[in-house]
Image 1: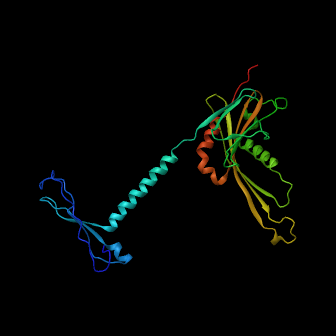
Image 2 (image 1 turned 30 degrees about the vertical axis):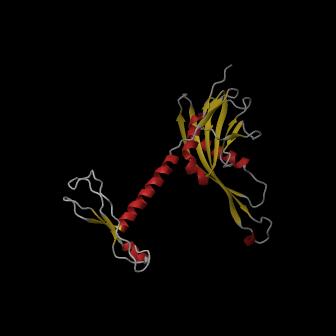
Image 3 (image 1 turned 180 degrees about the vertical axis):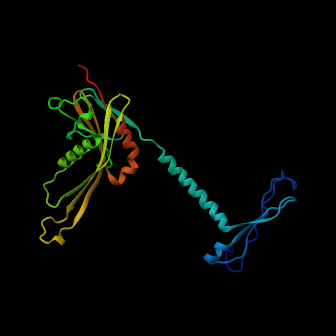
Length: 274
């Protein structure tokens, strides 16, 4: 392309190395020029780089600029995609927690931190996403005599009890608060320890008014406070009911799903020695 009006630099010339003869199958460009000089954007898109290869067996050919730019962009996109895939394939490390006193174990992400004083037997949470956590609840040995998780009925019946418990715990005395809850899935499985476990997934949304004391209904605008997925695993051992609970915001569930299910599948209830 001209550097200024009325001036065109001489075409670039590539010197052929002395070790390539004129009859060699390898060729190097002998001249690179840009045809049809113009200075508008639309014209530049239509410009053509002419790359000539000369020897006895090869004819000159032209590489359109549009094709050249497409190759450059494609290479860049593939490079970025490979980098993203490399990060995506990095697996999360897990650490095993074993409670020999109460009789259960599970794996949790190694970067999660333990929170003391939570209303649970054990509680870990993500240090960055505070609404993402895992906990375990154990029924009192004096008030429960479970022989199997099937004592709760089928998984569908157990899910209703789990959902009622969640709603009871989230009950609020604030005016204008409304909760919407639904059971997403229920299943049962026999783990490698030979015990049956129930897996239950529910969704709970919380809505609240921005001005619950307003007289006129139009002044009480309801907004969504939070939207969460709750994953529970139920197991029975030592005549006690054990529940592993996972909580995660619904908008990050798909991103964290694989890791969360690894935590669920790792949950085991263990026989306590006499």
